[in-house]
Image (cartoon, rainbow, N blue to C red):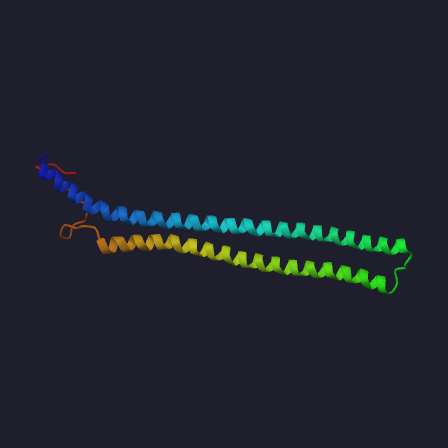
Length: 168
């Protein structure tokens, strides 16, 4: 094999390999971007689960605080000998209503946050699919623009001359 034949062979191989490697790189990049977006969507799903559990814990704490506040008010009225009619009942009702309002606001905000996060996770998954498809489109574009070299009308996978009488 002469050095000029070797360089000619390397040149021919690189003309074929470069577009193929570029296309493969585009596909790989699409898969990697899709994996990253899918991971982000999974993290959002985890956040949704955590938000739901945290809301449940806040409700439990609020219920305990409400029972404690009502018990303290009831005990104070009982100590002073006031019967639970009229104004004391109204005050106990207002205390309960305040806790119920706080719970309603928390439930509303939690539902809003979870709905927003579900939409975000859905969008991330759609972007992951688009990234995968984008990798294939980019690969096709690389092959279409850079093309694979052809010898006349022959297929590119015909023998590649390496030197005197040798083929690859």
